[in-house]
Length: 628
Image (cartoon, rainbow, N blue to C red; front, side, top):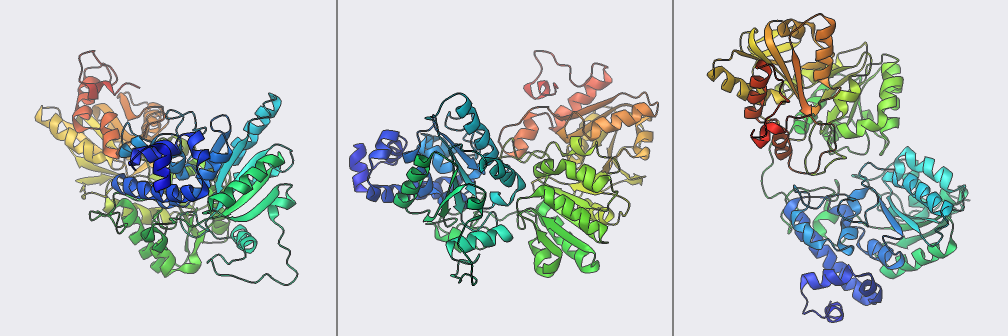
């Protein structure tokens, strides 16, 4: 490291080293021996900062040398460097001058955990949904060719997990048929969240001469080590040690000189250089919260989450019913299916990062007489909407979708907020959607969902602690009444966990002499006829959901009331029609008007006949956020 310090004219200060690495001229002037020390420094920096704030640690520790080589060969931002997925771009951020912002990584107003166009001209696409970057690269290269910008290169780093998604192969099919100079850097660490499986994983293992477990394996008799990429018209270079800057750089320079579609196969180790990550066979500390950097373990005991509750209940249901089979898109542990997989290994399908295939495969399982449960982040179900609509719902198949991370998710930002599911699923004929308000209702509604035989169901819940039980006073139809008499001035309809805020708001309103009922529909799509009766017994109704205000469960309830000839005004409160930034979940909910006092204020405005979106310039800021 001393040589690096001397070169930047510093005494070894952290900022001095990072400043040198972020200067393209200085970075390219470093010797390979100096770059070894620089790589060690970057790893130490990442472990320190990410353990403080949480973030994607393992993936970034694995691409340190690879990213350094990229920035020595390609001149960003004139040359375009893309990442798929974007959670492996932390080193790229360091090499483009953003090291100081890591003190506020994934915090409100701070550095995004993914590439961000607002942060830097070096960030081209804001992607965290996998398997997309090759299509971007194909389009960029074509655009530069049409504009005669022949000196501009396009390089894309694609994780081997992302290569399990269908869009990658659609893009490769087109890239291989052109002479466009796209340089594909395949970051092959044998994992996405967990070890990558499937035929493509076996192919990569054969190319690197190892099994998927890393052990050396002999080739089958007559096997020729020709890559699938070459068969598609893409030049293949490798495999290359992805932790050897010199080897990676030489391969990249060769690829660039070829001026045609070329793939550089880099073999890396997820979490490389950090013993706790390498030893973690579950996910190599893929994404961490605040952890002890010495051990990689959480610094505080975690609370029972919604995912934990689902995990326990689906395993219990699996023990009772042999027809239950679960599917995941490369997220066995994050969605809570690992215990089910240990108990029933033959009844879990991890299809890779391929949500479309997961849904239609589930349709096939249902056609075969089983009841599939597709567990996926709510944001990633967006990718399979056509399959939900045409492959499952059109055939009225009993498939249950479990939507983890629904609503506001927090520090992962715009692409990970699960705020579109209710708007999208409300358009699907025959699909029923449940939103539990507490852990007991999650267990209850999950069992009801898997008992449905005439069509698809979905159960949604947030990324958060499950919270306390919210007992019902009575049930009418599918709807639970949590407070009030079922008639009066205001009806607050809380969607899922929003019921807790509605109960607090009701206490405030009751103290002010405003009779208030709080109802939880439980099954929020379609509208419960019993809930429509409740609407007719109140002066105003306010629905509250942590999803898009437009087209969500509240909108469906409003339409159902109108169709039934009910004249009671129904006001829908929810998230605005915009992409929300990264911040803590509670912080974002409060910022967008989900505090109990803001709900009470909205009720006052509705009763006054001005609607909860009206505001005066002197209103408190929290109330102004009710604007659409």
